[in-house]
View 1: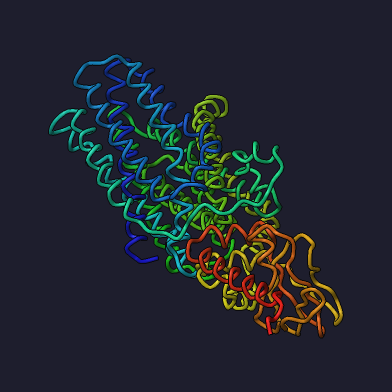
View 2: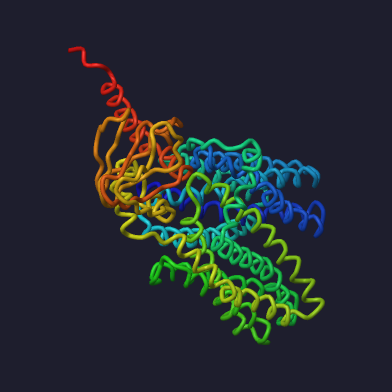
Length: 541
């Protein structure tokens, strides 16, 4: 990994955020001209729903294909879509053509964010740099959200909406060229044999990755944050209408309130660079509390100034919630299933956002906007307290023992992996203490674990004959796992030993899903097998 590759990814993040906002603005203007306000609603729905429905199903592609290639390919396809949309404008095509173009683009875009977020830990060498990378991601995303619509507005003032889509086509093409040059060590990992039914259910596995305790709490908190984002997107406009005396004043106030939310988001993103106790759930929870509290209090003040301040607080909380939450998720998800995991988050998150958007006007009509804001905001603010036990479990799942990280990092088969990948493996290891004379593995049996020796001595036998001895820092068991063959030797403890055990699936996926690691492990296995074959041959003399 180089800083160049990380910069290219962050450029893609900012570019997508900018073009997404500009695309929606331009498509909404075309829809308004072709079909009125109802058509604008259809465009907004089609920009989200196809991606929400397809994200969990097609994001498995991000675990099988080069992720930079996916990001470049999606941007290249969007360059074509932007050109087609410009043609729709200038040819005077009917509304259904626009809706088809927007819907197809939405479905294609479902691959993009999971691929980019799954790529991030591949470009960060150490776990300590992971959170700052997420903070930089959040800042790039926020900058794009401001620059994109602003640039589109300038083009609209100087030309027409068709020019916006020509500009978008250029931006998409440039992003495709930039991201195609990203280099990662990721490759499709060797699969552990699974039953046929499990293969059919693989596209839905993204959701099940968050089924275990701890992961559930983190996932639920992120989804509540998305509900709040959808709720606020409508509530801000409704609140501006209540506070302003004219329609024009309401539009100006709504824009300034949205800006306050964006400013808060920048401040929250910047806070991730100075936060202490970076790897933990404390700031994750604080972000949710600030987001909920800022929104809850918004309806209690009848002036614009307090509303700006509260929305800035809410924006900072939202940025912290997502930055620290994304950090937790990245540490939870093994690289070989990260694409589908993020697909589940973005797919279900889009549905949660839509739910919040629909709930805002309904609740406002039933109980009034101030009460609705208070109720929804307090639910989010209280959720970290209610889910604290689960969040602590999530923290334990993502916090390895330093001794385990050091030990695994010294093993040749893991030497080429990033520190993030080694730390992820270290979070899952099972320590095992065995007395002298214990058979750890037997020649001819199937293999399910990889072993690293922390202390003690073991003897390796083949055909009943001692062939080598193992001590602290040595490892064994990789041949059966990587070659899918029975154990090639028997290993017996010669003294009391302490082992660190890595599970079959994670070991195989981690090693074979990384080009350099896979090549090194293959060479190591071949060397050991060659040595065994030479030993088994009779001495000609």
